[in-house]
Image (cartoon, rainbow over all chains, first blue to last red; front, side, top):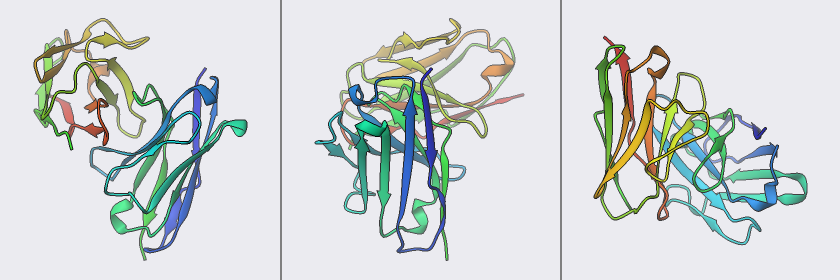
Length: 115
Length: 107
């Protein structure tokens, strides 16, 4: 059974940093692209980042480019999202998801950016 | 960036209805459109992939179709468990983009 479990969320002040983790199990992690998607409270879904199987290629929307970094550790079956220079508009539930097509999702982790 | 214009934003429905939700892509995205269902407090669940394919475990009353740049999700004979939010996604090109979502509510 595919499982994705996010961690690392919480309350953080504007301008500070936070790193999210996603532990994957139930599939061969190194064979799949992975992604992060977020959802602000009462809002729609927004794609945040995608990483290739080896980690050599990463993709971001303009809204987070230069501030967020997606990475992975295939030996640990883990995905990460380093978020720097956080803004109030980054407040959201963050989901990790498998594949570009987002076929499986984690349960999500809440990030609140507020002073 | 490719815009996915989703309509309607909300819909009042009755059990047994046939419901159709549409996303219009601003550029050609081919077959690379997925549909997701999301219930309150839950993660999205993929329902349709590559525009017309039913994901594993999804009831056959759900279907996806494409006409040009219009992509549709249809739910036949709506059941109570289908009342949820629905989102489309294009993943043909980065940045991947979602529609704004459709909220189904019971009359």
